[in-house]
Length: 137
Image 1 (spheres, one colour):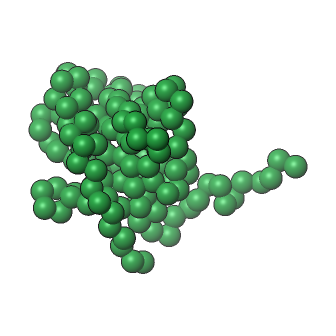
Image 2 (cartoon, helix red, strand yellow; image 1 turned 180 degrees about the vertical axis):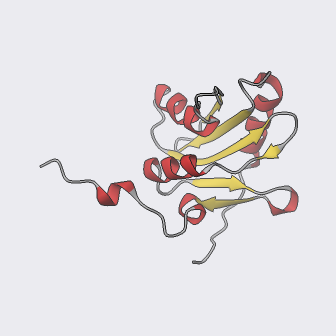
């Protein structure tokens, strides 16, 4: 597998970091995500932590984007509260992001190692849900 790097969308990283600094409070909201829609808009969201399992910020941003009519996302990033910086998506989020947006770029890394990678690069030998769906003919 060849890793393909894309330019890092620093405006997107700053948008997520701003939301993490200003909107994440307490234990219920500890992560912020920002996604750039194909039309250029930036959509932000925070996670909704709960001991029973709650949606990660990346999943909340998918819903927030859809609520705003943005169904095609180009790039996404998640940032932790308390200046934790960029946090890579968990396994569940990687799979959902791949299934919803197979061409999505995900910003990962820290410091000089920040980079934007295709979501498929984060799931080598991945299961692609769309490839295994039965046609509803």
